[in-house]
Each structure stands twice: as structure tokens, then as C-alpha cells.
Image (cartoon, rainbow, N blue to C red; front, side, top):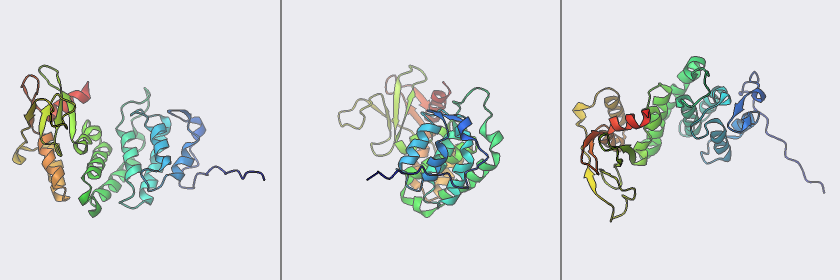
Length: 266
């Protein structure tokens, strides 16, 4: 008996037929496979289509002509999904928008896709306010980072996720030793020992949180928002991200957020 052949999934009508994907490229070549992957991707963040889309459209942080062309479809995908299920299209779109690793001469997405970015901001705001995130601080931080990416906030639109990871790795501004600034499950300290989670880990220096009254600008905005959204753990950890540390190698004091910005800028 002849084996039944599976027909390729066709792109739905909400993926613009005006886009000639065969003339666009992604990380692996011609992008004519993107519409079918967008159609297949659903609410399951572990779905294989999302893995394939990330690999093609934002490969190790690099974006391509097809990446920007996918923004309208990712926006529509996020609109179709509920506030609790739209995390993946929002995060992928945010990574594309935030990336600065693009082909020379490619217009910035905020110039060509301003309408889509404005809608993505509204969609991520709705997701951030959803009560289901009360017990999901990590996802809350990821979505908050996405919001900053859509707003064009440099550094934190790409680096805020370190907050959910419980560490930032930064160089000491004096001796340049690599410090792990740790907060959360294992405590609140800086160390040069990458195995800090072990009981026999090396020298620790206690972090100094910023006083809430001293938080201004973006720091104050993020802290106040986390409190309003019921994310008290995130609010607490933000005082350490915008607080001070001591180098575990030479004891030099430094601002954690300044060190993060310095690392991103190099």
C-alpha cells in the first residue's frame, strides 16, 4: 500500500500574501518556510514550531530580513491568543525588535513597524496585568523585559531577564575580575566562584540594596510597577539590581546596574 503523503501546512489568510517570503532570508537561507511555521505555532511554548522560528528568525540574537517581515504575523498571533497564552509570540517579537545585530543598512523596526510595535505594547501590557502571573515571577520578568524592548529601552530590553535567572555576571570596574551578582534562592551576594550554589563555594560579599526612596527613573518605575502588579519578590530583587556590590576579588564597591550597562556596552 502506498504511504499517504502529508501535505505541507499552508499559511492562513492572516499572514500577509503580499510578502514574498522566497525573496527573504533567515539564519538558514530562504524564508519560504516561515509562513507554515507561523501557522503551526500555537499556545504551547514548548511546541517545535516555536523552536524552529526562534532558530530561524533570531538565531543567537541575530536578526534577518525575514525576522522583521514576521513582526505583523507575530503581532496577529499574539492578538489571537489569550493573555495567558501569548508569551511566545511576544517574546520572539521583542527579541527581534531589541536586537542590534542586523544587516548593515537595514532600517530599524520602529521606523517600518511602528503600528505593530504599538499594538505589541498593548498586548504585553494586558498580559502583565493578568492575575495568572501572580505566582509566575519569572514569566512576569520576561514579559516586562519584552515591554521595555518594544519601548526602545536600551540594555534592560535585553538584559532584565537576569532578574529571573537570579544572577548577573559583570566585571569589577577596578580589577576587572568577573563577579557573579547573586540574588534570590542562594542569598544576596557577589562572588567570583561560579559554583556559588555549593556549600563550599568561595568568598562572598553581601549586596547592599538601594533604598526604595532613592529609586528614580527606570528603576523607580519598574519597582513601583512590580508592587502594583503584586510582584513583591520582583520588587525586592530590583532593589539589589539597582543597589551596590563589592568585588569579591579586590573589595572595590560598584553599582550593580552600572556594571550591567558597562558589560552590555562593550
